Image 1 (tube, rainbow, N blue to C red):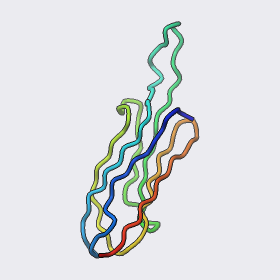
Image 2: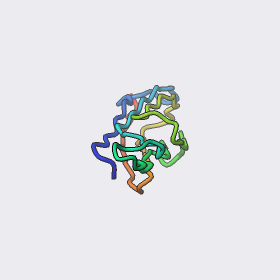
Image 3: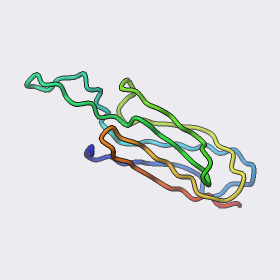
Image 4: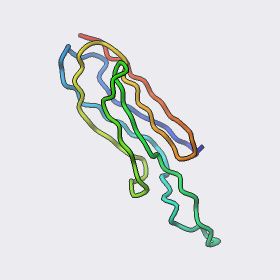
Length: 109
């Protein structure tokens, strides 16, 4: 597991039925490509978030596969239509098998 990994999500707490909302996500992660070397000349092992998903009430909203060229602390911003109240589940998958998850509830208002 990478050190100091912290997912952050900004999503509205309320939305009208059918409203399009903006979702912003950021995960603090070093994103090591596996191509750099340390001070002793040893290759630093690859360690990246390789997949990000977002589901709303079990329906896929976003599913992204990431490659080693992605930057440190990957940031995603996207829009989603909110049909009804529910939970948005954000999941980040790490090369080492770690899974980081954040849930945001959105109420109708």
